[in-house]
Image (tube, rainbow, N blue to C red; front, side):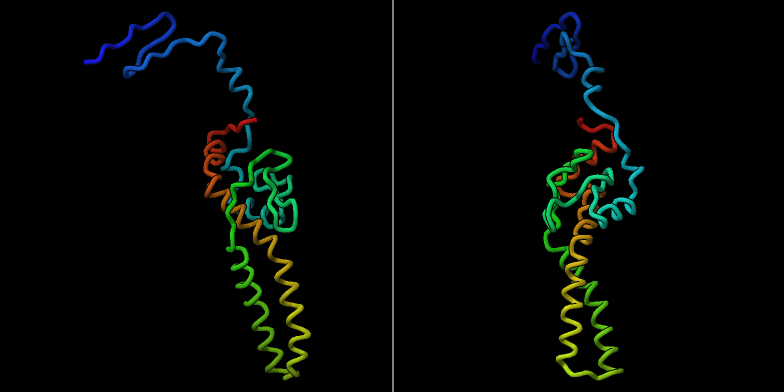
Length: 171
């Protein structure tokens, strides 16, 4: 049977491990370096998605989510929430293809059935419309996907979600 070390003054032993009082350590000083934040329960999924759609930080709603057209900021410049964990990959593009397809294809079919224009008129109308809709939707959809990942604690966001649920974040 292993010999347990003696308990020193100001400490205790538990499960074969000895803990002693650390001089100069103050739990309040450690916790004062942390700031209280809005609890995750106060940022519902609907709000987080709206913030993502508008290109804002899903946590605070004030900082910018993107530093360029589709380049995500490494962290929020207002609240410091780390955003570099996101893994949106191709999912926003797939969503935009589905959305634009569901908007443009019925319109093309309707115009063809009612007016029967020449093919060059179809191309002149619907190619620019498809391009404009795709470019207009890709950034908001990517923001919403990132906000969904943030809210669900997916990929690298799980550590931040644990901190939010405890009510503290490093600050």
